[in-house]
Image (tube, rainbow, N blue to C red; front, side):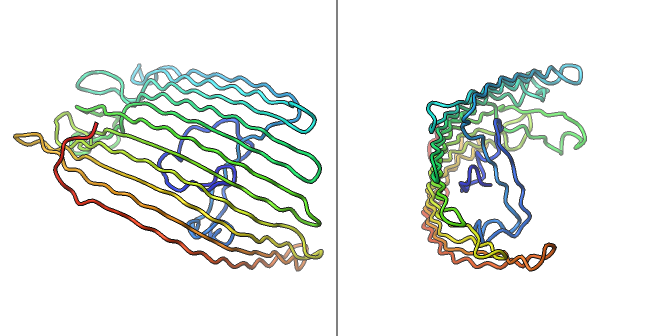
Length: 323
């Protein structure tokens, strides 16, 4: 997954509500020449809307009421966008989104709702556009606070039912900062592009792993990640039949993870494990499209990648439960 041209290094936090988008592209794999070795199956390119030189204001709201005789809670969504010029060369964009999910499932032991969550996204951007140079910078903050995963124990309930029975509703708490700065400079028959990205993400969960009304297996997790990347490339035409893209890429991230596994015994027992990982990736790439005829194009490319990882993984040991 790429957001505004920035590769998202881990899956957690990458699947969230989206709004105010300019477009989404789903590229059939493999796409490893231009996007790296982790896109054998394809790439999803998400592009948020840029600041506009003309004034734009949009407000949306939606309410989904309870379903199936009141099993689910109400789902409220609100969003707003304002964008416009600050000067002939400078434009801004501010956007906000909030979703309040009342929970789709009903917990059989208590009758309460499960799956409740609150998600808020705040985004701001500036764009400078003058002559051959265009700069676009964006900063986004996301916060999620809700109940834990809603699991169904298939030993107790039929798979085609919505019956759930948890003694631990749990929680999920996530925060993310995401920033990008893109520069485009028209040069001859092509364009030089530089994309810098930064992301900081944290997530803490508490889940009922056995998904039963008894305390059999609960788990708490903590995850923190920070990444930055930079890509510099040139894309243009070398003659009427050949389109060429070439450039370099660097990526760095640090990931830390911990987990408490709580099992029932005569005395409460907690097993703890986790670790840290650092990653540095470097790449050089080139791809050419040779238009042989109007109906036939020959594409060839080459990418060199070097990746370094270091990890420190703890053994599982007993300790006091994490907060």
